[in-house]
Image (cartoon, rainbow, N blue to C red; front, side):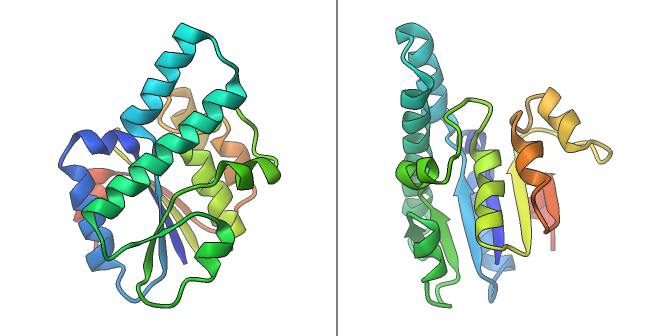
Length: 188
């Protein structure tokens, strides 16, 4: 199984549909789980928290809902992909169709001890999910330019991956690729 996180910022361009098409065409016969970023929906949560000063636990739950909104949008674009709301649901999916879109459950994440913090975004959640699923690989598809010699710490400093990503990635026993969407769509 491969976990592929699609950055929410890609929803502002045609690259999003191209990424979903790439997954549908180039990963046939392999189990794939797509993790959606929160995109503009999560940005709105950040803005609302700045204005209303509600706590991080509330913001975290709202940001997870933003990822769920993106999951619904992805599913609306690719009806052949299946929505799955938990690790258990993903593991119980039949071999075909072979592409699932994770629509995360905030209660499952809370029970797993995932912190309610802006340091943890869909990047870290993708690494958490990949570890839980014993994935064979994790791919983060980003709108940002990714230098070939940049490590996770460099990417975190630039805000390309979240601050907590390295901690989640260090637990991984699978390869992790962080790639620009145009490069991803030109692969294979």
